[in-house]
Amino acid sequence: MNNDIKYKKLPNSGDHNCFGCSPSNPSGLKMNFFANDQSIVSYLSVPDHLGGWNHLVHGGVISTMLDEIMSWSAIYLLKKITLTKSMTIDFIKPVYTEQALRVEGKILEIVSRHETVVSGLLYNKKEELCAKSNGIFALLSPQISKRLGIMDDDALRGLEPLLNAR
Image (cartoon, rainbow, N blue to C red; front, side, top):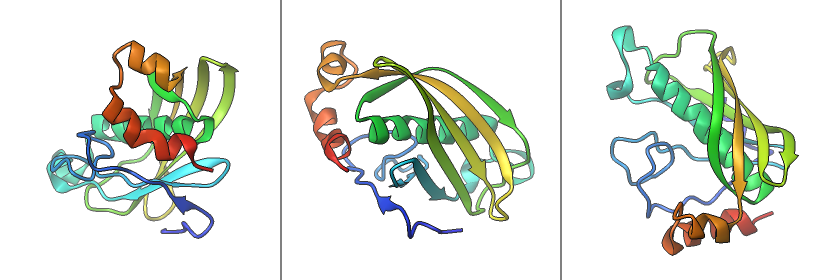
């Protein structure tokens, strides 16, 4: 499942507390991301403490993984700060804790310079599609996100490697 040969690892600073991607949040998912010119992927296993009955991953955690991959897709591929405006999710197959998973995000449509539609797909270790999502994301420049109080200078510095990478 770890087919990241055609993808490059994206930088992710540990100086934030994001539940989805911070490597330093002890309760989080610690998602890492790999990119090519068309998509972003993350390989992870959900810890058992985020499961429910019979080691099923909670739907809210699945939603977080999909939201995170879609957001990172827009940040990296479009070089903008993002905010989730809306998202729809289809839960197709059960997802279990402590199992290898792959999450993939792609840009579906650039609606305007301020809005994009992104897809997220979640696969299990058998490469079966378990959940899918489409999201509408607001696109913001670093300056606008700072002015609106969405991100401070430290957070923006942490994203600079993504916004300037290619």
